[in-house]
Length: 233
Image (cartoon, rainbow, N blue to C red):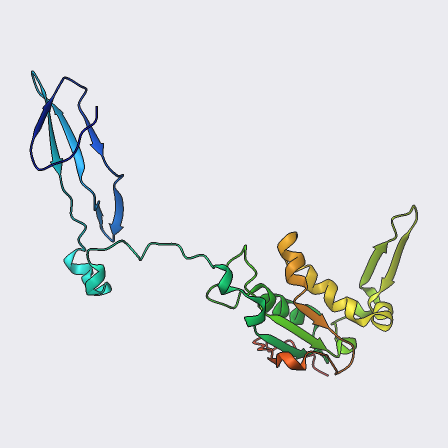
């Protein structure tokens, strides 16, 4: 049965008593459940069905109007809309660049700080499924430090894919051979596993020695809040 809502009362044939609504009721404002569109109420009587239109006005309660501007009192609920970053919110050319000197810095603490900024977890706009982080440059990677006996006991394994192709080397051996790989391995393990993680890993630039080719990006010093990141000699 098609019904057009108007200010008058309409009588129709017998039908089960029910309520037809032009839109589902939803909570528009805090503490009130209202709808800005009219609803049709169907009431069954003895010989006919009476249909009447009820107009509901979307108004903000008086005690909550201080949170809204005057033009928003009769408008949609803008407080309960979930924000999601658009493409213009995470353009790579607009992202900041940081630089950090790894000299005498504890490997794990440095890697976790780098992963936080690459992931974007230090931002209020952090979104788990979007690349919102920055680029991080690490220099003097060969001077990164570890605690305890990890220099001789920490092992790194790689496999050639052939039977018996497992190669095992210690932290000290890998640091002498490819010092950049140590920090890359630590940060990669703290990033997501999948497409997003592979994309975020490209934001890490690790170099042996104090020089790097990213002067044009004007990197700034990486903010480090961990006071125990520097190894005490």
